[in-house]
Structure formats: C-alpha cells, structure tokens
Image (cartoon, rainbow, N blue to C red; front, side, top):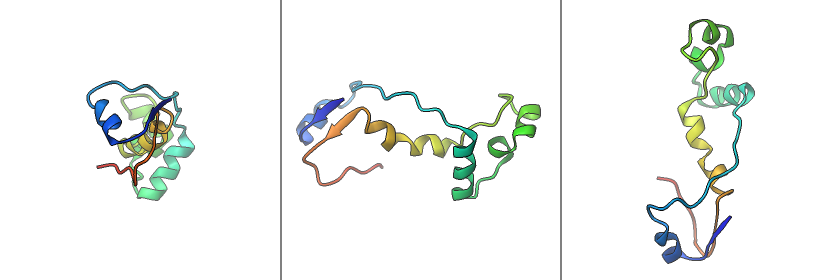
Length: 90
C-alpha cells in the first residue's frame, strides 16, 4: 500500500506503476446483478447456454463497464490518498 499525502506526491507518480491490487474474480451473479442495474441483458453476458454454444469464449463474459466500475475498489488496495478534498474519476 502506497501512502500519498498530498497532490504533489500524487503528481510525482504520474506515468509510473504504483502497484497492483489483488485478483478479483467476477462471477456470474455479479454479472447478472450488473445486467439488472444497467438493463444490459445482452446474451454474451447473461445467457450461459448460448454463450457456451455460440460465444467466442465458451462462457459468458463480464460487461466492459463492469470491469471499469471495479477501478475504485481495486485502487483502494493500491494507494491511500490523504489530505485531499475528493477523488473523482473522469
């Protein structure tokens, strides 16, 4: 865990690898819940039988936005940013 105490320290990491989070397994329940929340029920994500038979990976796959939405969770395993008003994703 990297501790970043202010913006200048944060800026000093620009372009550098800070660390890596633990692995996170995305299971079908998480995919299904994300599909419900986003109304994205495309078969490649939620239809196990069709994905197994017709999909390129022989299984369902996670939504791209689901994987992106995990960034804050994974980031908190890498760095503790202190003395800032807020952190935002853009």
